[in-house]
Image (cartoon, rainbow, N blue to C red):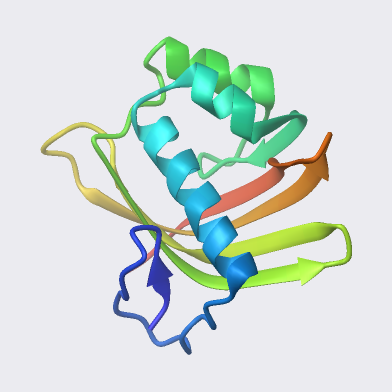
Length: 140
């Protein structure tokens, strides 16, 4: 079973993520990212995201960091629920790739949306920052 960002196991057909110091660090970063995103905490996200962040969003648009932050500030992007299951944490040279599944609810009472995601992190000035993200809507 994959590891949720809460650190607890969740249901899936994937093999378990092997928990190492690297996976613990990135489960923590992904959890902080999810919590800041859910709270629309632009300042917190600004610390976690690279200035070069590019997002291939689940609405089939490509956005840069400033666009995503502006949409969050304006309330255009707003989730009432956001759960993540991390299935892969893999270091590839200077990059760390995180893959898994997410479930979001936009406004209370709206349908649950299932998505697959890939987040890519790199070190910038001694800190890991997300600089690429892809998410697409899937069927449950």
